[in-house]
Image 1 (cartoon, one colour):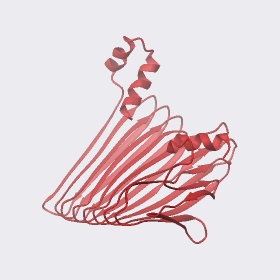
Image 2 (tube, helix red, strand yellow):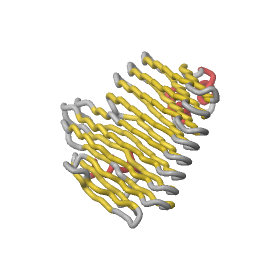
Image 3 (tube, one colour):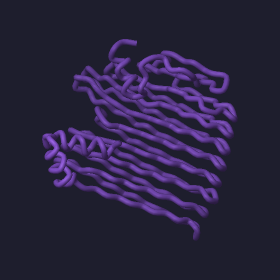
Length: 305
């Protein structure tokens, strides 16, 4: 990999060298490195547009890294990745996509990920999106995530998009069985004329299933954000959806949290808060020696931490 590709790899996956355990690297639309283990197998789909990941039942304390990098302008990359996670697993998956666009054409990555989480399995999924480049071409990412959690399964999903993506349409769909749990933590920042849309659609079908979906975002300059979420309680369950946003300059943020109860013992909550940075917060930090810009950056960093 060249310097640009290595820098993107560090930004989206925190990787400085070849990781231990299972991994699958995709660079400029092609497979660029793979390692399987006794418990984690990776199989290329027919046609090469994605992979199937099979994690054996009972696999514990193992990880999978699967970053995607686009470093050529004008590339449009589409992948379909399916994760088959066996019963009683406890694994961490680190994914994400980085784009370097140094030309005038649009570069785009669309990733469609499906998770089939087995009974009593636990999975932590970390996904970061990042863009850079000195060209005029746009960086576009459209991730779609489908999640199916069986009885007693648990999935924690952390997603972050902080810099360099001109347009994104982020969709997450989930269906939970009995005693299943889904935790989602989204962090998002837009600036310039960027646009970001997030849509969460969660069905709590099993008894005692639960979901906690939280989005934190910052909108600067003339950027626009749209947050949509709907948690549907179809059984005795608990669900919570929350959107917190800081708005700055001439940005626009719209939040549409929705809850739908179809069972008398469904307990659902939705929250949304949009506002500017409080002046007293900036003043307090400025008294400690920070400039106004540095104070804003410190507050935003803490908000998105």
